[in-house]
Image 1 (cartoon, protein in one colour):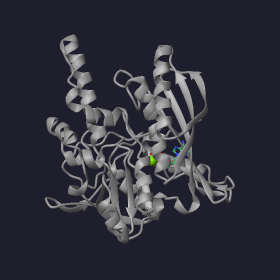
Image 2 (cartoon, protein in one colour; image 1 turned 30 degrees about the vertical axis):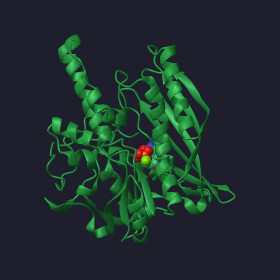
Image 3 (cartoon, helix red, strand yellow; image 1 turned 135 degrees about the vertical axis):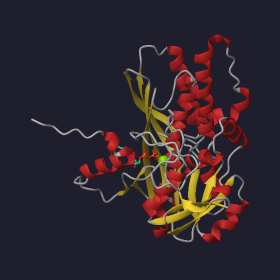
Image 4 (cartoon, protein in one colour; image 1 turned 90 degrees about the vertical axis):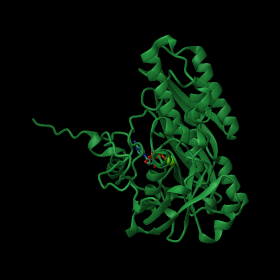
Length: 374
Ligand code: ADP
Ligand code: MG
């Protein structure tokens, strides 16, 4: 008997999710379900004009993090923050979390304390309660977090609401989390090569390391937008890289977009890391993952309000779908922008840092990193 075996890598992460969706297509759909698979969080009606949003993410040792360089308290914080980020991307307020933990034999009570101190700190910072979970042994440290949030039906924002003529906006700066990872991986390599005689210099790169190990969900940004009277037309959080997220908005909204590369902000420390590794800073900013900033679109009439907001940049505009997703810089002109960034189950990308516009897929030089944006 022959049984066919198709490696999941042949579909890639997003192809795999589409395929799962097909298998689930026959399940009768509740009329209260507004958004199922395909956005940052699922959305359903909870009564009284309120919607609930639900998201879940896993963090697995050896895939999403390396326990040798993340303190357990940061890991606890990050596991909550990455989920809050998805809730916030729906313009919703996080309320409740559950944590399921798979613990390996070499995990200590003290590490557990650190982990939960970090979880507690994040819950306090984002105004949430932790209401349950599950605990089991595991071969490697495994965390699965679910966060439930709430939003008025009139305020919810999806990936699918961008319109031609809207402007593309980004909170904060990007590429820092990837730069932090580069630094940490490099330090580990140096330690392995030089042993005890090597003294890591992490002082100089505190900002980018913190971007990688202890990211912040931008609850403050959706609050500021609300205060400014701006309701984004579409929104997504930057977990897999700006280029990848612009593609998600484009695909779900049925639009194209142009990203103005010089308008995409990065921190000077991120630039210093790119320079040190002789990498292209634009590649960090466009394809680096795990920054957990918000990428969103606003109507043209809201642009003056955005211009007045601190820490939010207009980085491009929304165009007709047939134009595709493109990047513009004065040096290179207009060129197609590929999603690149990190995808699970992806074949290793070809080194091609110079060509954003190569039609052969990912153009990021080195996506062999452990972070992925969950
Ligand atoms: P994000 O990066 O914002 O967390 P993902 O790319 O992980 O989003 O997921 C995209 C969509 O696919 C989400 O709606 C998510 O709930 C859904 N999804 C991911 N994995 C599965 C799965 N194994 N089964 C069902 N839905 C899934
Ligand atoms: Mg997301």
